[in-house]
Image 1 (cartoon, one colour):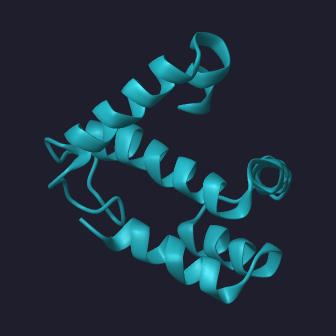
Image 2 (cartoon, helix red, strand yellow):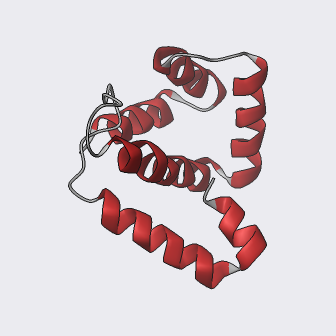
Length: 106
């Protein structure tokens, strides 16, 4: 994830990486139901997706975010619906709605 850059390379490299991801992700399709055959799929999945996760971590706090990721892995979450349900259970309906909007927005 993008947080790796901050820990390993410092805040300046991290901010530059985020800026690049945001620039390249602009005007791309939503991550929601994107086909891996889409010409922009790699950018959407690996850059836009990383940005959504980063923004989510900032919204809920990094410690809670990492605990949540452990729960996702332990629960073997394998669908978006299950992920969103777990977000609502662990955080709130408002956070779930925010995340769903992020996933569905171009």
